[in-house]
Length: 185
Image: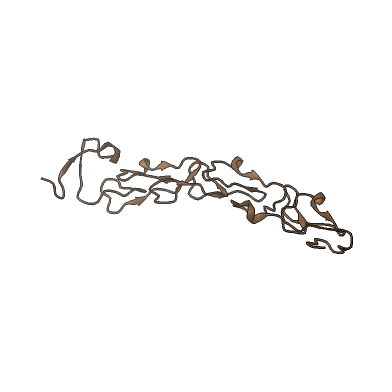
């Protein structure tokens, strides 16, 4: 009993033949792949799908759910990373576009990419950490801008994340601010 070629009762989640028995003489088809009858080598599930071990055919490769992505030959759904969104059946995450960001894992639609708030310059796609995109000192960034605007002459801004021209301070008495984007008087 046992040994190569032995008859084994079918395990439903492994997709054995409908006869109720399977003959295993080689390894079980690995997760992320499928093996049709007579297969010599496992075939990877298509991009945007995944499978458990023992998948008997391509139809056993399930589409990735929204909020996840599945690369060719994936054994499980991978959570969509921050800065991206994943609609159903994707092989790769889609970066949130410029002027948007998301800090959360598992975004399932473009609607989960939030508008960049005032004080930040979201001039890249795939942003997951707003701190790295604060408007630079001496500038201000209204909502939706792709370029930091300089504080006007006679004003300065010593810190980043300015939201409007009103956040540029007037040059104090005893000092002059003769250039755009002055950081210190």
